[in-house]
Image (cartoon, rainbow, N blue to C red; front, side, top):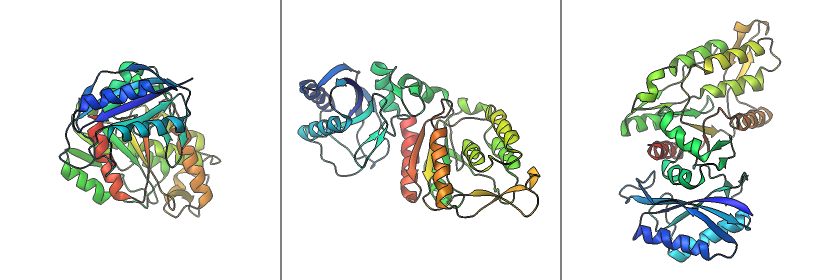
Length: 340
């Protein structure tokens, strides 16, 4: 049998009764054994339309012989039986049953994504989940549910955004800065700048050690670790590659790590490194140059990015399509609310 972790929520009608009915229906399923149910906890809505009522949330750990797809179908059927009507994303609902984890399965289809892509940073999910399934593992980087929960209290209130240089989020992030108390950290210009110099400039932006004790959120339109993936992808055969990687590792130990990374996957463009006309062996002449990336480089870069996100020292990451800028703005705001 497989072990599955569910998130339950309700913010319409008799919320406790809805959660209790969902648990009862789960227990009545012949191919499901409910092993544990957490206590019920209240939370503020994260994202969605304004004016919603508070949620009541819980988690349930199951043993099941159903496949992930079959289990999801049963959850949707239970939601329908209790009366859920899907009208708008993150809108009010009488019941919400999310399949968070299914053993260590990682799968992405049009109807199912495992593990749940947002469970890794949502406090209203992790608090009840850690109560009954703290040892279960989020398979992307190997952190346990308890570690993910602990990260919300010990990491800096900092979100890093990984994006290509041809994408600007100035309008979207400026609106966020007006809406909530936060500080936006803009990436220094890198055109015609040697990569090692740029690495040092980035580190100065995020080396403030007192962030962990401050209440204000920081959002950077760059991710320091993205530089490593770019170096690894494009500098492998360069004479200065080893020195560059060693410097990155050294500097990385001194900077503030984000609580969450939002990675915007651009299907068309991203920046690459390029040599100017002088000898490539001279490290200071290996400089940034903005230009379109071709499909092979794009595939290689994002493949390495996904591998990097599997490192045990990599913070949780949420992948989003870069072309929907309004969605990026909504996701950042919802993530800030969910991590409070």
